[in-house]
Image (spheres, rainbow, N blue to C red):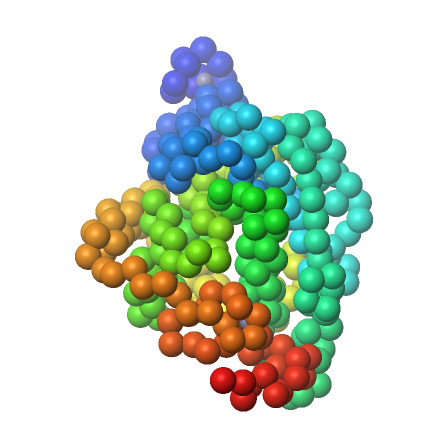
Amino acid sequence: MKCDICKSKDAVIYQPYSGRRLCKDCFIDDVRRRVREEAEKQGILKANKVLLAVSGGKDSLTLADTLASIVNPKKLIAFNIVEGISGYNRKEAAMKLKKYLDDLGIELISSSFKEEVGYSLDEMISSSKNRGLNIAACTFCGGFRRKLINNAGWKVKADLVATGHNLDDEAQTIIVNLLRGDIKRLVRLGDVPLKLSDRFVLRVKPLRKVYEWETTMYAYFKGFEFQDVECPYISQKPTLRARVRDLLYLIEEKNPGSLMRIVEEFDLISDNIKNNTSREELPRCKICGDPTSYGRDICKNCELLIKSGLMDQKYLFMS
Ligand SMILES: [Zn+2]
Ligand SMILES: [Zn+2]
Protein backbone atom coordinates (compact mmCIF):
# COMPACT_ATOMS: atom_id res chain seq x y z
CA MET A 1 0.00 0.00 0.00
CA LYS A 2 1.27 3.47 -0.93
CA CYS A 3 1.65 6.46 1.40
CA ASP A 4 -1.47 8.69 1.56
CA ILE A 5 0.67 11.85 1.38
CA CYS A 6 3.42 11.33 -1.23
CA LYS A 7 1.54 8.51 -3.07
CA SER A 8 4.88 7.05 -4.13
CA LYS A 9 6.62 5.34 -1.21
CA ASP A 10 5.32 2.31 0.68
CA ALA A 11 3.23 3.07 3.76
CA VAL A 12 4.71 1.71 6.99
CA ILE A 13 2.61 3.57 9.57
CA TYR A 14 -1.13 3.65 10.18
CA GLN A 15 -2.41 6.67 12.14
CA PRO A 16 -5.76 5.53 13.60
CA TYR A 17 -6.74 9.08 14.60
CA SER A 18 -6.29 10.51 11.10
CA GLY A 19 -7.14 7.36 9.16
CA ARG A 20 -3.98 7.83 7.06
CA ARG A 21 -1.26 5.40 6.06
CA LEU A 22 2.16 7.04 5.82
CA CYS A 23 5.65 6.20 4.63
CA LYS A 24 8.59 6.70 6.97
CA ASP A 25 9.62 10.09 5.53
CA CYS A 26 6.13 11.55 5.49
CA PHE A 27 5.56 10.31 9.05
CA ILE A 28 8.74 12.04 10.25
CA ASP A 29 7.71 15.24 8.44
CA ASP A 30 4.24 15.01 9.96
CA VAL A 31 5.64 14.74 13.52
CA ARG A 32 8.07 17.61 12.89
CA ARG A 33 5.27 19.80 11.52
CA ARG A 34 3.23 19.36 14.71
CA VAL A 35 6.27 20.04 16.89
CA ARG A 36 7.07 23.14 14.87
CA GLU A 37 3.52 24.46 15.28
CA GLU A 38 3.67 24.03 19.06
CA ALA A 39 7.24 25.38 19.22
CA GLU A 40 6.09 28.52 17.46
CA LYS A 41 3.14 29.09 19.83
CA GLN A 42 5.42 28.43 22.81
CA GLY A 43 8.03 30.96 21.73
CA ILE A 44 10.81 28.46 21.01
CA LEU A 45 11.49 29.83 17.52
CA LYS A 46 12.26 33.27 18.96
CA ALA A 47 14.18 32.10 22.04
CA ASN A 48 17.94 32.60 22.34
CA LYS A 49 18.53 29.58 24.50
CA VAL A 50 16.33 26.59 25.36
CA LEU A 51 17.15 24.00 27.99
CA LEU A 52 15.94 20.50 27.08
CA ALA A 53 15.17 18.24 30.02
CA VAL A 54 16.27 14.80 28.79
CA SER A 55 16.41 11.32 30.27
CA GLY A 56 17.60 9.11 27.43
CA GLY A 57 14.11 7.74 26.85
CA LYS A 58 12.30 7.88 23.50
CA ASP A 59 10.48 11.11 24.31
CA SER A 60 13.65 13.04 25.13
CA LEU A 61 15.43 11.76 22.02
CA THR A 62 12.45 12.69 19.84
CA LEU A 63 12.36 16.10 21.54
CA ALA A 64 16.05 16.74 20.80
CA ASP A 65 15.88 15.47 17.22
CA THR A 66 12.74 17.34 16.19
CA LEU A 67 13.87 20.62 17.76
CA ALA A 68 17.33 20.32 16.21
CA SER A 69 15.57 20.17 12.82
CA ILE A 70 13.58 23.33 13.61
CA VAL A 71 16.02 25.68 15.38
CA ASN A 72 19.80 26.04 15.41
CA PRO A 73 21.10 23.22 17.67
CA LYS A 74 23.58 25.72 19.16
CA LYS A 75 20.60 27.36 20.88
CA LEU A 76 19.71 24.10 22.62
CA ILE A 77 21.31 22.71 25.78
CA ALA A 78 20.30 19.28 27.01
CA PHE A 79 20.12 18.67 30.74
CA ASN A 80 20.17 15.19 32.24
CA ILE A 81 19.37 14.40 35.88
CA VAL A 82 20.75 11.43 37.77
CA GLU A 83 18.06 10.77 40.38
CA GLY A 84 20.07 8.09 42.09
CA ILE A 85 17.91 5.00 41.57
CA SER A 86 19.98 1.85 41.74
CA GLY A 87 19.71 -0.27 38.60
CA TYR A 88 18.00 2.52 36.66
CA ASN A 89 20.49 5.37 36.12
CA ARG A 90 22.96 3.42 34.04
CA LYS A 91 26.29 4.67 32.76
CA GLU A 92 25.94 3.07 29.30
CA ALA A 93 22.58 4.77 28.75
CA ALA A 94 24.14 8.15 29.60
CA MET A 95 27.02 7.52 27.16
CA LYS A 96 24.61 6.64 24.36
CA LEU A 97 22.55 9.74 25.05
CA LYS A 98 25.69 11.88 24.87
CA LYS A 99 26.62 10.40 21.50
CA TYR A 100 23.19 11.10 19.96
CA LEU A 101 23.23 14.66 21.22
CA ASP A 102 26.80 15.17 19.96
CA ASP A 103 25.67 14.02 16.52
CA LEU A 104 22.80 16.52 16.62
CA GLY A 105 25.18 19.29 17.70
CA ILE A 106 23.51 19.75 21.10
CA GLU A 107 25.59 20.31 24.24
CA LEU A 108 24.79 18.06 27.24
CA ILE A 109 25.10 19.06 30.88
CA SER A 110 24.03 17.01 33.87
CA SER A 111 23.44 17.05 37.58
CA SER A 112 22.18 14.75 40.31
CA PHE A 113 19.85 14.78 43.32
CA LYS A 114 22.85 13.86 45.46
CA GLU A 115 24.89 16.86 44.30
CA GLU A 116 22.14 19.45 44.54
CA VAL A 117 19.86 18.27 47.32
CA GLY A 118 22.37 16.21 49.31
CA TYR A 119 20.45 12.94 48.97
CA SER A 120 19.81 10.48 46.17
CA LEU A 121 16.20 9.47 45.47
CA ASP A 122 16.88 6.06 47.03
CA GLU A 123 18.12 7.79 50.19
CA MET A 124 15.08 10.09 50.36
CA ILE A 125 12.72 7.14 50.09
CA SER A 126 14.48 4.92 52.59
CA SER A 127 14.64 7.78 55.09
CA SER A 128 10.92 8.48 54.74
CA LYS A 129 10.15 4.75 55.05
CA ASN A 130 12.24 4.57 58.22
CA ARG A 131 9.99 7.22 59.68
CA GLY A 132 6.95 5.12 58.87
CA LEU A 133 5.80 7.38 56.04
CA ASN A 134 4.19 6.08 52.88
CA ILE A 135 5.16 8.69 50.30
CA ALA A 136 5.27 7.58 46.65
CA ALA A 137 8.71 7.75 45.02
CA CYS A 138 7.18 9.78 42.18
CA THR A 139 6.21 12.49 44.68
CA PHE A 140 9.85 13.00 45.66
CA CYS A 141 11.13 12.52 42.14
CA GLY A 142 8.70 14.83 40.34
CA GLY A 143 9.18 17.74 42.72
CA PHE A 144 12.96 17.61 42.89
CA ARG A 145 13.30 17.06 39.14
CA ARG A 146 11.29 20.24 38.58
CA LYS A 147 13.52 22.10 41.05
CA LEU A 148 16.77 20.94 39.43
CA ILE A 149 15.48 21.61 35.93
CA ASN A 150 14.49 25.14 36.91
CA ASN A 151 17.88 25.74 38.58
CA ALA A 152 19.69 24.52 35.48
CA GLY A 153 17.55 26.78 33.31
CA TRP A 154 18.59 29.75 35.44
CA LYS A 155 22.25 28.82 35.40
CA VAL A 156 22.51 28.65 31.62
CA LYS A 157 20.23 31.71 31.26
CA ALA A 158 17.67 29.81 29.21
CA ASP A 159 14.55 31.67 28.05
CA LEU A 160 12.59 28.42 28.14
CA VAL A 161 12.80 24.91 29.48
CA ALA A 162 11.39 22.24 27.14
CA THR A 163 10.32 18.85 28.46
CA GLY A 164 9.51 15.67 26.53
CA HIS A 165 5.89 15.33 27.67
CA ASN A 166 3.82 13.85 24.84
CA LEU A 167 0.11 14.00 23.95
CA ASP A 168 -0.76 11.06 26.21
CA ASP A 169 0.94 12.75 29.19
CA GLU A 170 -0.80 16.03 28.47
CA ALA A 171 -4.29 14.48 28.15
CA GLN A 172 -3.72 12.59 31.43
CA THR A 173 -2.58 15.77 33.19
CA ILE A 174 -5.67 17.65 32.03
CA ILE A 175 -8.04 14.93 33.29
CA VAL A 176 -6.14 14.44 36.58
CA ASN A 177 -6.29 18.15 37.37
CA LEU A 178 -9.99 18.23 36.45
CA LEU A 179 -10.66 15.31 38.80
CA ARG A 180 -8.74 17.08 41.56
CA GLY A 181 -10.57 20.32 40.89
CA ASP A 182 -7.19 22.08 40.61
CA ILE A 183 -8.23 25.00 38.41
CA LYS A 184 -5.11 27.08 39.13
CA ARG A 185 -2.90 24.28 37.87
CA LEU A 186 -5.19 23.68 34.92
CA VAL A 187 -4.80 27.29 33.85
CA ARG A 188 -1.04 26.82 33.63
CA LEU A 189 -1.47 24.09 31.02
CA GLY A 190 -2.58 24.99 27.52
CA ASP A 191 -0.57 25.80 24.46
CA VAL A 192 0.61 29.27 25.40
CA PRO A 193 2.81 29.16 28.53
CA LEU A 194 1.86 31.26 31.52
CA LYS A 195 4.45 32.68 33.88
CA LEU A 196 3.36 32.81 37.53
CA SER A 197 6.70 33.61 39.15
CA ASP A 198 9.86 35.44 38.16
CA ARG A 199 11.79 32.58 39.70
CA PHE A 200 10.43 30.07 37.21
CA VAL A 201 12.01 29.61 33.84
CA LEU A 202 9.00 29.17 31.57
CA ARG A 203 8.34 25.49 30.84
CA VAL A 204 7.05 24.32 27.48
CA LYS A 205 6.11 20.94 25.97
CA PRO A 206 6.83 20.86 22.23
CA LEU A 207 5.65 17.22 21.90
CA ARG A 208 2.19 17.82 23.38
CA LYS A 209 0.47 17.09 20.05
CA VAL A 210 2.44 13.91 19.36
CA TYR A 211 1.07 10.57 20.60
CA GLU A 212 3.36 8.45 22.73
CA TRP A 213 3.32 5.61 20.18
CA GLU A 214 4.46 8.18 17.61
CA THR A 215 7.47 9.26 19.69
CA THR A 216 8.37 5.56 19.96
CA MET A 217 8.15 5.09 16.17
CA TYR A 218 10.01 8.34 15.52
CA ALA A 219 12.89 7.31 17.80
CA TYR A 220 12.88 3.86 16.18
CA PHE A 221 12.97 5.25 12.60
CA LYS A 222 15.81 7.57 13.60
CA GLY A 223 17.80 4.59 14.82
CA PHE A 224 17.86 5.64 18.45
CA GLU A 225 18.40 2.82 20.87
CA PHE A 226 16.69 4.26 23.86
CA GLN A 227 16.72 3.27 27.48
CA ASP A 228 13.81 0.87 27.85
CA VAL A 229 14.32 0.01 31.51
CA GLU A 230 11.27 1.11 33.45
CA CYS A 231 11.83 3.01 36.65
CA PRO A 232 11.69 0.34 39.38
CA TYR A 233 9.47 2.56 41.52
CA ILE A 234 6.75 2.92 38.90
CA SER A 235 4.58 -0.08 39.76
CA GLN A 236 4.83 0.22 43.53
CA LYS A 237 1.83 2.45 44.01
CA PRO A 238 -0.98 2.84 41.50
CA THR A 239 -1.57 6.56 41.27
CA LEU A 240 -4.65 8.41 40.09
CA ARG A 241 -2.66 9.21 36.95
CA ALA A 242 -2.13 5.50 36.23
CA ARG A 243 -5.88 4.87 36.50
CA VAL A 244 -6.64 7.82 34.25
CA ARG A 245 -4.07 6.56 31.73
CA ASP A 246 -5.68 3.11 31.55
CA LEU A 247 -9.12 4.62 31.13
CA LEU A 248 -8.00 7.04 28.40
CA TYR A 249 -6.32 4.24 26.44
CA LEU A 250 -9.55 2.28 26.55
CA ILE A 251 -11.44 5.28 25.14
CA GLU A 252 -8.77 6.01 22.51
CA GLU A 253 -8.91 2.43 21.30
CA LYS A 254 -12.67 2.62 20.69
CA ASN A 255 -12.64 6.23 19.50
CA PRO A 256 -9.29 7.05 17.87
CA GLY A 257 -8.43 10.74 18.21
CA SER A 258 -10.03 11.18 21.64
CA LEU A 259 -6.75 12.14 23.32
CA MET A 260 -5.97 14.66 20.59
CA ARG A 261 -9.44 16.20 21.02
CA ILE A 262 -9.07 16.43 24.81
CA VAL A 263 -5.88 18.47 24.37
CA GLU A 264 -7.19 20.60 21.48
CA GLU A 265 -10.50 21.39 23.18
CA PHE A 266 -8.68 22.14 26.39
CA ASP A 267 -6.43 24.66 24.64
CA LEU A 268 -9.52 26.60 23.59
CA ILE A 269 -10.99 26.52 27.10
CA SER A 270 -7.67 27.44 28.70
CA ASP A 271 -7.27 30.52 26.49
CA ASN A 272 -10.66 31.64 27.74
CA ILE A 273 -9.84 31.04 31.41
CA LYS A 274 -6.50 32.84 31.05
CA ASN A 275 -8.15 35.95 29.76
CA ASN A 276 -10.54 36.00 32.71
CA THR A 277 -8.37 35.25 35.73
CA SER A 278 -5.92 37.41 37.62
CA ARG A 279 -2.32 36.29 37.51
CA GLU A 280 -1.23 36.62 41.05
CA GLU A 281 2.50 35.98 41.65
CA LEU A 282 3.13 32.64 43.41
CA PRO A 283 4.30 32.79 47.06
CA ARG A 284 7.92 31.86 47.89
CA CYS A 285 9.04 28.98 50.08
CA LYS A 286 10.38 30.35 53.38
CA ILE A 287 13.20 27.81 53.40
CA CYS A 288 14.57 27.49 49.90
CA GLY A 289 12.99 30.52 48.25
CA ASP A 290 11.49 28.59 45.34
CA PRO A 291 8.01 29.53 44.16
CA THR A 292 5.33 27.34 45.73
CA SER A 293 1.57 26.86 45.40
CA TYR A 294 -0.91 29.51 46.54
CA GLY A 295 -1.55 29.35 50.26
CA ARG A 296 1.71 27.54 51.16
CA ASP A 297 4.54 28.85 53.40
CA ILE A 298 7.07 26.19 52.54
CA CYS A 299 7.28 24.26 49.32
CA LYS A 300 6.34 20.62 48.88
CA ASN A 301 10.00 19.62 48.39
CA CYS A 302 11.18 21.14 51.68
CA GLU A 303 8.16 19.66 53.44
CA LEU A 304 9.07 16.21 52.12
CA LEU A 305 12.66 16.55 53.38
CA ILE A 306 11.50 17.67 56.84
CA LYS A 307 8.94 14.84 57.09
CA SER A 308 11.58 12.34 56.04
CA GLY A 309 14.01 13.56 58.66
CA LEU A 310 16.45 14.95 56.10
CA MET A 311 16.04 18.62 57.01
CA ASP A 312 15.98 20.29 60.42
CA GLN A 313 12.53 20.61 62.05
CA LYS A 314 13.36 24.11 63.26
CA TYR A 315 12.63 25.39 59.78
CA LEU A 316 9.00 24.46 60.29
CA PHE A 317 8.64 27.19 62.89
CA MET A 318 10.45 29.92 61.05
CA SER A 319 8.32 32.94 60.43
ZN1 LIG B 1 5.06 9.44 1.90
ZN1 LIG C 1 11.43 25.00 49.71
